[in-house]
Amino acid sequence: MSLQAITFDLDDTLWDNRGVMARTESGHYAWLDEALAAWLARRGETHLGRFAERFPLAAYQAGRRELAERHPLRRGDFSWLRERALVALLEEFGLPRSGAWLWAAATMARFHELRLAVSPHPEVEPLLTELGGRYRLGAITNGNLAVHRLALYRHFRVAIAAGEIQAPKPDARPFLAALAWLATPPSRALHVGDSWQEDVLPALRLGMRAAWIAADTPHAGELPAGVHRLRHVRELPALIDRLERKG
Ligand SMILES: [Mg+2]
Image (cartoon, rainbow, N blue to C red; front, side):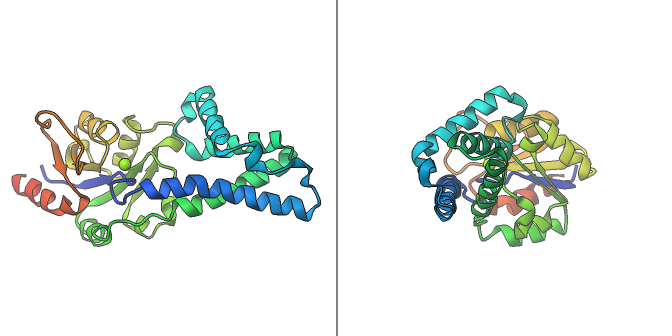
C-alpha cells in the first residue's frame, strides 16, 4: 500500500544534537549566574553571594531528577522540570517567590534560544521540500526544542512534543495523535528516527513502517519486517522510492 504520511523524530535524526545540548545546558545556567550577579550588584544586594557557587550545575540537575521522580507524569516535560527546579533553587538562594519565577522564566528564554541553535543536515531542507509535495509530514519529538521557531517547522502539518503531553515516546499516544492530525492509518505511514526504543519499536507496534537512522549502532541479527536501516537521513528518498515500487 502506498505511503501517505511520514513522521520524523528531530534530535539526532534531522541534525546532530550532541554539541547543542552540552552548550545549552551549561550556557543558560552560566547566563543566569552572571545576569543575576550583575542585577544584585546594581541593587547593592551582594550578601547573597554568587548563585552558581552556592548551587553548582550538579545541584540543578539533581533538582530536576528529584522533581521527575516526584511527578512521574512530567518526567518527559523537560521545560516544566527545568523551570520549577530553577524556581526552587532561586528561592533557596534568597529571592522572593515572584523574583524566583521571573528569573526562572528569563533563564528558560535563554535556554530556548540556545536549544534552537541546531544545524539541520544540509540535505534536510531540500528533502522536506520534496517530500512535503508528495506526503503529509509530521514531527514527533521527546525534546523540548521550540520547534515552531525553526525554519523547517513550515514543512510539518503537525509537530508533537511528546513529553509535554505527558506521553514521551515510546508511548504510542504521540504517534496516534500525529496520525490523527495527518488523517492517515498507521499502515500508510513511515516513521523516521534514530532511537530503536523510542522510534522504531513504537512505530512497528502500531503497524507503521520505520526508517531507523543508525550510522554505527550495532544490531545483532536481522531487522524485523517493516524496518529499514539507513546510515543517514539523506538516504531516505532512495528508501521511499524502493518502498513505493514494491507497493
Ligand atoms: Mg532522536
